Length: 332
Image (spheres, rainbow, N blue to C red):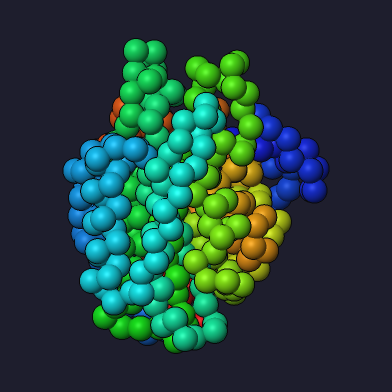
């Protein structure tokens, strides 16, 4: 997932290329509490298997057989869990003019309920390893176990749980396509580095939702949520448009004992699918993303490299994210 990092120049303005935040958040002591809702238990082994299955298809890059096969699998799994499934097929245009055969996959649970929450992740993988330490790998696609695969794996397990025990609200799960086909580092001199090159599937859905006038109370994006030693700061765009929901999610995580992952401090801004959904629909959305603004690179070493594989995936992190999201969904 790729991302254009945005610097907080002030409380209101963003500019490209730097990291960090000019704001501060006062930390509160972490206290572990037993959940009081009737949320089911998130099965990290199951989520891990869903990630491994995606990787086994190969590189999920638009216009490839592996991409089509994985899309068929994701759609069939949502149907198996009892979701009403919509598929949006579109030819989207990449940064260099390449037409991309793209497919957004939407699973709707409890469609008649007007109170809804939107959960989403991108399912495509980056066609370039443009941050790999070896320049010979820069034009090679990558496994995307964490970047793409982890968010989808967590949402598939959440969908499985919803299929067995419905919450009191409607839930829409969307797997967005063509998120990670943005301009690679080696092509920026020729094509520029516009953020519009990223998140093509979510931008398309935002302009063409699967249901006219689609509304949800808020949305949660999961991106790179499976790596060892992951940390999730309160992302800037999320705080700007969905602060009360960010605080709810982070508070829920701390109450469950996952405060070491969900850091009670502000992070930098990231161009990601949540921004596209907010811009196009006005639905407040937040991004749970493994990005540490206080490190040199921000993202972990495997980001956009050949090393984004199953060796990085940690079941404890999957559990922390998945259980937190389930608690938020079932506690509404």
